[in-house]
Amino acid sequence: MLLSTSAQALPDDHDQDFQLQADNQLFDQKNGLVTYTGNARLQQGSLVIDAERIVVHFDGDNAVVKIEASGSPAHFQQQPQASKGKVLAEADAIIYSHAERTVTLSENAKIEQDGAMMQGHSIHYDLTRELINAQSDASSNERIKMVIPAGTVDK
Image (tube, rainbow, N blue to C red; front, side, top):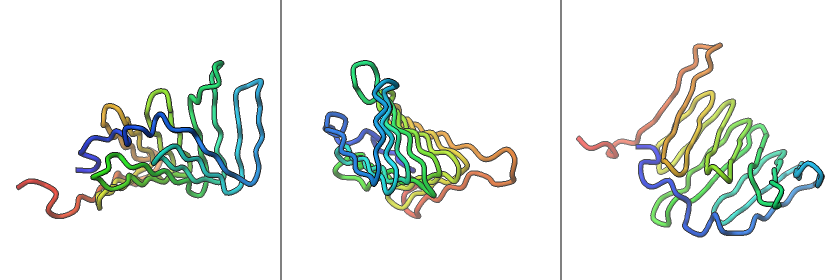
């Protein structure tokens, strides 16, 4: 099913340098924040986040703790394994916890891999435990949608 194989990123992704590009940058050293706006892109190995705005949160040791991206929509992609297709995700807001290895997609969330697709108000993706938790919007009648390609379910 969706992301049923190991959801771990390529083995060396987590150890790669972060590369960031944008039209504008604001570095708030006192609060451990760097804000990138205007055609912002973050890349670490196979992980790529494209958004209108990306905020990188650092801890006291200048290690990346969390990345927040927003856009209409913001996009996230990562190659889980060399032999599997890329995980492609989008939402109005994306929070990637580097420390916890989770991705939270909020507002108009969608995630796809190898033809399988899940869509909902919000999706929480735990990369380590390989869990996906999708939620509908309680204030509307919109429900979680999932597409499983024919031939991928054992009969």
